[in-house]
Length: 294
Image (cartoon, rainbow, N blue to C red; front, side, top):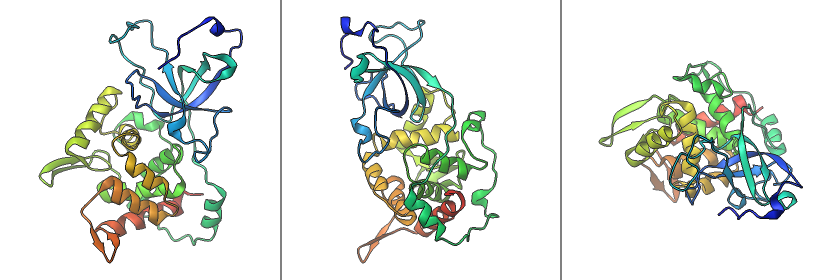
């Protein structure tokens, strides 16, 4: 809960900040966002995991009620760059977000990924449909960085705390599920309708639609679906997040996403996990890594 104001907070030691939203899944449903503040919080998630970051209240318009149970919460999404100040001054423990700032980010690789890439032959085929410059269904997706859905998805995940290996793993899995088409519909997936990049079905599909509606996003847009993946990983699919984050190669990342997030039909053969589509997922992920991890 936000600490009560006292006379020490009058602004004599005003400390502003820029930060990045890591989660909007406020466990207390107060409309807060969890943030990593530049210059205050380490950007190394092994030193400071996301779940240890502070929750910040957000300023809402004066047109809202401003009392419990009345009005709407802020709709700031994970990955947003936000501006605010610390209500406790130099102690810097009680952040307050005033608003978000439009920006574009580009993924970066760590040194081990660079060295690994330099040792790889350039074998991808640029003519494969995976890398075609395909239009998306909503202008809102123009804010995503990239010339194709594959590149936009890859950049989105590298900008949201995933390694290039893991980002490529997402692309490979979504390619196997939907050919990277957020509008893809399967009317009979085990007797139920499935939709989108990950071919969400049943309760997960309904939650995608509800999440998108809450943020006034078209649910069949890349923007809505990519942010919904982060939302799932931070809530109902948190177990999958741990498995994905622990992966250290493209193959391991693609396999972890397949096994723990997508969960298609599978077999365990001599103690090894396998699925009929696993090769497609892994190979597409490897092609993605070779294409974009530069």
